[in-house]
Length: 285
Image (cartoon, rainbow, N blue to C red; front, side, top):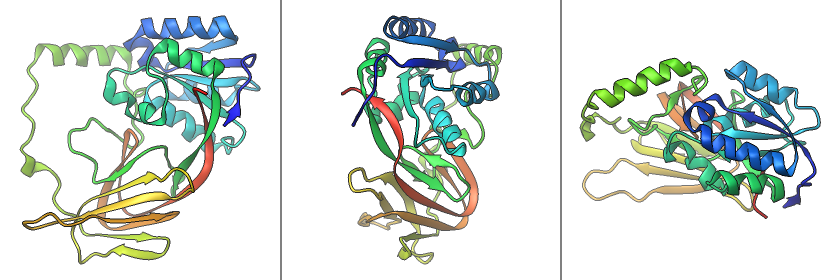
């Protein structure tokens, strides 16, 4: 880990969903950060302003107050600008619910506003692996094919910024007043897919073997990603096929995938490459 100076100037970018969803947690985080460092606070109203704020941060250390999608957006922007190597991000996780903070929790970010803000001030930078695909998209945590049905993932290019606050408020009111529709039966879930999965140039599973799921997650120490393919089974459950690889290519009929909080595709082929230690996140020492 790399020590982070507590005297840094901070650029605090507050995701609009966090601001509208839990203003009290945002206020607490701002107070703690302002008491411990010189801060400049940005309140973007949409994705363009969010991106501009980070791009114009200067020498300030960026702190994102928001959920998993806000963190992914920040990493994606810095990756596109080729600025990840020299920039350590910090996060104060504030989301609409626990599901919106799954990635943050898995990365080791404290969940409380006070604890997370103190980690920003007193923590250390940890370099983390990144999955980068052949369209320059990034994956911080887990990737799954096919995406879980009804898991609330946004379509690729969508995000919490794209819906205005008044629309979200109306949608929330409608959901409160109207009964939720019944979940579709299990049979409505996507069936087995025929995909070819190649790991470092070696075929792990081919098109003649239907698969239920493919999951890819950074392996951690030593680099690489852990790949697990669960073949479709009849009767007894088939044993998963596993590998650790630095380059993973999936191809076949049109398929969608869930990368962190976003659903991508459909595509017929996609390659993900592990970039070891590509991005930095401030975590408790």
